[in-house]
Every structure is written in C-alpha cells, then in structure tokens.
Length: 212
Image (cartoon, rainbow, N blue to C red; front, side):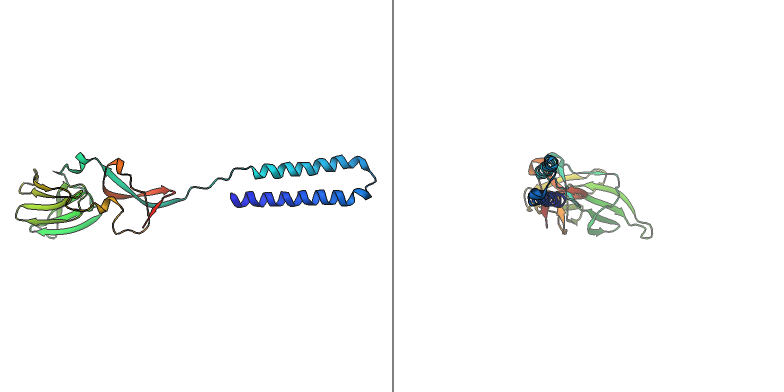
C-alpha cells in the first residue's frame, strides 16, 4: 500500500511538471489564447490530485503468523488436582513405569495412567489432572510431581481417589510462564494478569511481539 501511494504521487508530480513546463514554454507561441484557461485548469487538476494522493492514509496489513498461545488458569484451578477418566494423549512428556502400570506425562496438564498388564493390549485407565506438570517420579504408592511451581506428593494407592498429602510451594521457577519450552518461533506475549500459565497451544497470531 505504501509503495503504491508513493508511486502514484511521483507520477502525478511528474505529469504536473510536464503540464506547467509545456504551458510556459509554448505560451509565447500560442495564437489561440482562449485555450490557456483550459490548460491551466488541467494543470490545476493534476495539482489537486497530487495533494490528495499525499493525504491518502497508509494502512499496513497485519502480520499474521502461526505460533503458540499460553493457556491460563486461576491459582485455585492450578492447585486443583484430581483423578478422572482417560484422555487422549496430545503432547507426550516424561514416562515412568511401575509395573503393571505406565505413567505418561501430558506436558502442562497431568499424567495418563496406562494398564500394561497385557503388553500386547495396553489401555489407558485414568488421567490425573496436575496443571503445569512437566516431570514425575514414583516411590511406593506416592507420586511426586511439579504443579505450577510447587512440588506435590500424591497418594495414588487408589486411582479413583488420588489424594494430595504434601505440598512444597514455589520450589520451581515458573520458566513455563515466561515462554514456551523447547520451541523456536513466535508466541503470544505473557500477560500475568490473566492467571498462571500451565501450557501452550498452537494459534494464529496477529503482529506478535515475542519470539525466541
């Protein structure tokens, strides 16, 4: 748009220059003086077009790109840990085995529990919702997991009733809240007033200001 406007102004300026130059160079040779007002009017018209073209507002097309967008939750939602029905695996993270079960981290969301009693037919039996989770470890009947900057200990002896038994607050830096991990490209800048970031999802961004 800017290049088109500049070209238009240049062409109009050139035509106005030619018009006025030809008029004054040929004025002494002009026998029919009645045509002079018409020529002056034409030149004036070009001048007006030149001024008008300079006043055209320049609009920029939005820079639309593919990137990542943060997923926000409230502090209450971030600390709400519970077991529920199986979910689809979207972004696989860490894997921990405790035969006959396999625990699969869903990056930023929680843990899939897979029954591997029959290795030829493993199946998901539960999902433990742990917002912001990236890493897990298991000892006996306890699962240790990061939860939006905290370290939580969960009693998983009953997968239908997972119980939080301990929490150490602010043990981990909220790197996930500053930018998406293991990613290079554009992303939506973080707005801390919207809550705690527990993950990132693909999105179409307009004029993104953040990149890594």
